Length: 238
Image (cartoon, rainbow, N blue to C red; front, top):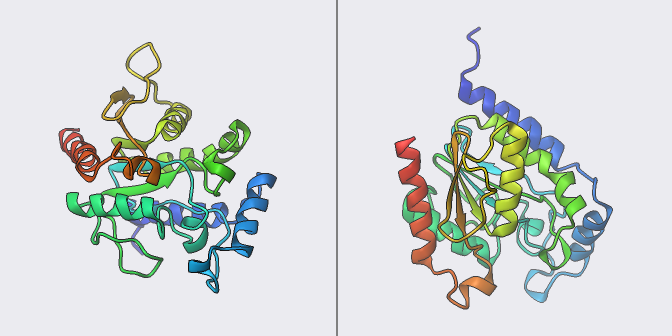
């Protein structure tokens, strides 16, 4: 019997990690909140079965670009079981990913909707929805090993796009755990469009596609697409 290919081995390891992530109960406050949200959904989602478990990352096991967010949305990933899926932030993100050619469709509705990512993996620092979208430092540290594990499995990743300052900080911490350090002595500071070399990886900053940013015009589709296009450009140059 032939040995599994590198792609198959990465896919197997990601599947094993997924099975671990979805059973996690390390953070009592987040466990209580994710389950409470499911018991009293807004009217538009009443009658739907909520996932209400930690949400794993998703994407291409051969990915060279990784997008990192903050955490699943209470009525998005916590409902659908897929990261950046079923909420306005996800709608905004996947429309841009599709426009750049990293996703096969412009919408992410639910698992089984036909969406495929090419050369891309999408993850988050925290895997449970936090109250007010604010994980505590302890909750961040409890969850960060999952992102570290993904980076170790996805050894081809050369560009990480951090959506927001929290994701930027989490990505730096995860990359450090993998053994990658910033090229500059000073710790890189988040900014939209900021680039920082961290070991063999380029970290790119982008405003988070939250409604607070997209409704006010702080982040426009053109701005997000420009950052993603830069990620593709950097990947091609790596």
